Amino acid sequence: MFKILKNFFDFCNAEDRKRFYISIALSLLQAMFEALKIPAIACMVKALLEGNVTGKTCLTCLGIMLAAVIGSGLLRSKATMLQTEGGYSTCANKRMQIAEHLRYLPMGYYNENSLGRIMSVTTNTMQNLENVATRVVMIVCSGLLTTAVITAMILFYDWRIGLILCAGLVVYFLINSGMMSVSAGMAKQKLEKDETLVAKVIEYIQGIFEVKTFRLTGERSRDLNTAIDENEQANSAMELKLIPFMTMQTFWLKALGTVIVLVSVLLHISGSMDMLTAVIMVISSYLIYAQLDNAGNYSALLRTVDISVRQAQDILATPQMDISGKDIAPAHFDLAAENIGFAYEKRKIIDGISVTIPERTTTAIVGPSGGGKTTLTSLLSRFWDVDEGRVTLDGRDIREYSMDALMKNYSFVFQRVYLFADTIANNIRFGQPEAPMEKVMEAAKKACCHDFIMSLPDGYDTVIGEGGASLSGGEKQRISIARAIMKDAPIIVLDEATANVDPENEADLMKAVEALTKEKTIIMIAHRLKTVRNADNILVISGGRIAEQGTHEALMERDGIYRGFIESRREAASWRL
Image 1 (tube, rainbow, N blue to C red):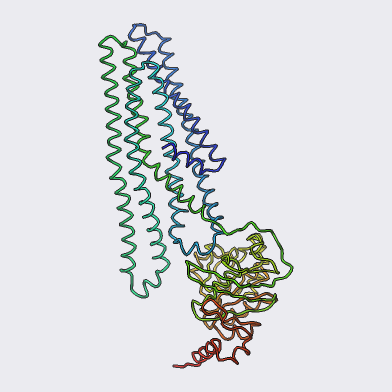
Image 2: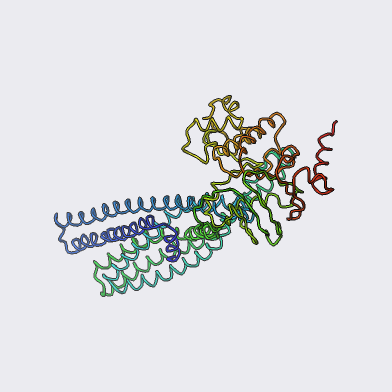
């Protein structure tokens, strides 16, 4: 129990940890005020036994009791406020820390770890810590401290009852330890089912178009319903396995209170304990029960807190790419790959590629699916680090640049565009949040999207759905190009940016691409002849290697992969119904 509390406090940052430590100190003072009820009662009982109840006695007892109640209430309120602030602040800071940490993880991490797991940790896990951890830590700490203070006071009044109480508490904590052991395994299973459920919900929502198109509603719903049922079973199983321990704890505390009452009465009857002490012992037995029972039942949730902390720590402990480079501003923007190699899950994807991309030139990358085209562009822009060789920018290994300094030099337009649930203006100025509206509109005009934006109900202030769901594919592409134009980076990476654009939007999109790529270093993955034939250099990637390279004319003279690629495209383009 104490180790779990320590792990949680270590998880907090210094400021929030300070809040928790102060709240614990206040809880200790609160426990002392709670314990003042015993002297107040003792004072009145003594006066009653001696037949000497006076106004002064009543006022004294009332004053002590009021001090106990008011002091305890005020201290509990302040301690609760500090712990609540600490809990919410800790989770807010950890969410930000995890988000920042994820920025610098290699892209392979997102293939090995499902989106559901990351989403579950940043939502469910952090919410568990926000809502559960604060309450659990507060109740458990307060209960333990109050019990410790009252136990010390009982030992002061009568060591025999104190020893009985200590022995009973040892048995109580053994039962509690068993409950926490069971909770450990169940809590882990519960959180795993939470992750699976989140993953299935995301999968179902993201694939809802395919589900409806192929009439797979029942099939996909079955997977989702199974995840929901398993999550329900995990939660129910955890509760059912913990209930017997909670019942045993409560029974034992009541039994311990009964034993204290019986022993106190017997000691008084035998003449070895005076009436005043016997009454105090009887009252104290109920105070112990009330505080400890609550703390014991909530302590089962400490394992959930512990596993939640460990899940967040697992993400934060995932090795980042080395981002400790220098803030270098390159004078030129020549890119080069020098005998680079890269493997994913022991499968060689890039195998000994060397290529030079002079600044302000266009390099097109073509080749069969799965040949390594996207992986090559990812290595050139350091989404992954190479396993062998090196990639250079202006003659420097890109690993010498800090990640932020490196990314200033790249803009990306992908086949699948992601836009945020925000205004169109904010999506365009994503890389420059403080950019004025005039600059946003200028970029939109260059990207040929100003007219359709102005036709929307609120123009540039129109809030689009998450992922840009309320816009067409061509509109999203042009907004992403406007975003890249705003960034004005010297190196542009186009990953099949025009692959799925309808003919109506293609002309505008090509004009937008032309505006974006003017006087830039261009790396493009493309399958359309019109987008690759004017490239300064064409790389044909197959099996992780450069099978061919050269200009369109030079490659067409060879009877190779590129020529076959172009001829098959021409044949497909000339086909008519």
